[in-house]
Length: 115
Ligand SMILES: [Zn+2]
Image (cartoon, rainbow, N blue to C red; front, side, top):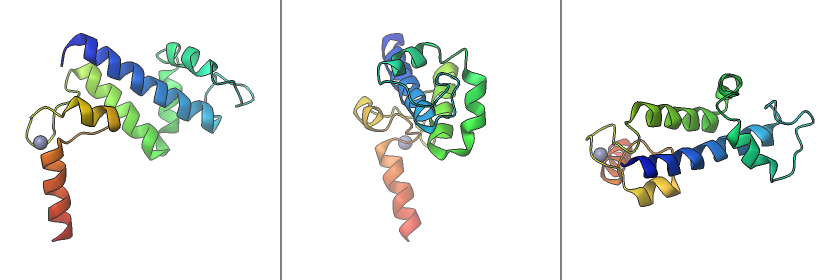
C-alpha cells in the first residue's frame, strides 16, 4: 500500500474514531459532549495530541479496533492479512477499515467456526 493510500485510510479511521469519542462524550474536544458535526474534522486534526485519552475509551470494542488499525498503519502492516500475509483489498478496507483478514481467510475462519 502506498503512502497516499495509507494517508487516506488514516484519515478515515481517525475520523471514525473522533466521531465515536465525540458521540460518547468522553473526549476532551467537547466539554458538553454535544458539538456540531463540523467539529468532528477539527477533532480528527487534534487526534494525535489527544491519543492518550483515547486509550481510556478502549473498553468500547469498536474504539479498540480503530486504535489497533491505526497502530497497524504506524507499523506499516495495515491492509496485510494476519493469516496469509496477503493484501486485503481496498474495497474491503473501505467498507471495514478495521479488517485484519483478507476475504478468503475471513471466510475460511467463518467456515471453521460453523463446523
Ligand atoms: Zn488472508
